[in-house]
Amino acid sequence: MNGIVLLILLSIFSCEEKKVNDGKVQISGTIENAPAGAVILSQFTESRPKVLDTLQLDNKGKFEYEVAVDSPTFYELNLYGQKSVRLALFKDDVKVAYDFSNPESLAIEGSKDSQEMLKIEKLMEAYQTKVNALNEAYYKAMGENDTEAIKQIQTDAMALESNQSTEVKNVINSMGDSFASLAAIGLLNPKNDFQFMDSLVAKLDEKYPETKTIIQLKQQLDDMRALSMGQVAPEIELPNPAGETVKLSDLRGKYVMIDFWAAWCKPCREENPNVVKLYNEYKDKGFEVFGVSLDRTKEAWVDAIAEDGLTWTQVSDLKYFNSVAAELYQVNAIPATYLIDPDGKIIGKDLRGPSLRAKLEEIFN
Image 1 (cartoon, rainbow, N blue to C red):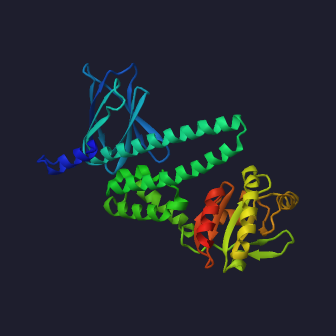
Image 2: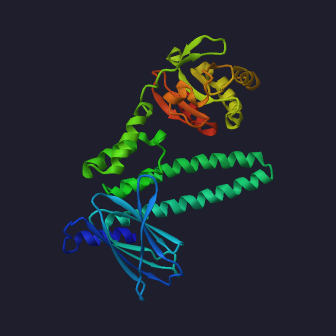
Image 3: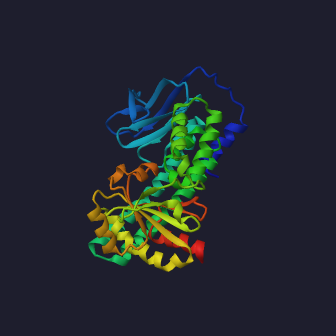
């Protein structure tokens, strides 16, 4: 049985004195075989960690420190600049133990929310290992100019991101209503996981009302709600290269990919041949593309359309990222895409390359 699960079960079925919530939490622990340096305690604020104090250890490597905690709050113990321990504290004291001679020795007792944080740490460590392996393979393929290997690595990277989302959500679900899940929510992509995040934040808001972090997340999600999956895509009404005003809703009744791009955007131009191929393959089945250029000049925009053979609808107000469409769709980087169904509802986001092909095959085949 997982050690964390065992610890939780023991605490549930054991008889122990309940701590009176006095607004203070004690952080204590033991550090063995420590290198030279210091143990620094920081509190996570809205923007960055704020250093609270340097903790003093006795000759046995033990320490104790008391902090005032009036709402769910995240902290970090920086152990000699070599190990970080994230803590989620509210009402329960926490005890930390770590032996520098054994990297797997970290143990947390007391605060159940802090124990849940270990799940996130393990998940991130495993993910980072896979990302590092992909990066190493990518640079090797680039050095050897191996285009097939590069394409495969890009496909593997997209699959890794998708799998990571599933794993993160599974970990969050395993936490129940622990506010530690707020530390994991930042690992999700709100464009694709909006409904999950919205449901989680609503649940946590009921248990931890008036918590600043939750209030901020609710506001961010409210700002994104109009662009969440299942919502009707906001109308875009802009001129085409001929100066004629064209509406996104003119294509209602078809599956439409809204494609934010620009002539100056290298990744956009590299993706265009793939979109052209898929467009030619599926246009007779009901697939359309609605290109929204974030160019500054008409000349560059029109030249790129011709060079890349883009035969679908194109519009632009030539205002770069200040385009009314970019602001409406909260686009701050390109390429960016939204896929909408015949009723105009959003059914996909940021689909490119293999992911776009897979979605179109799912729809039309």
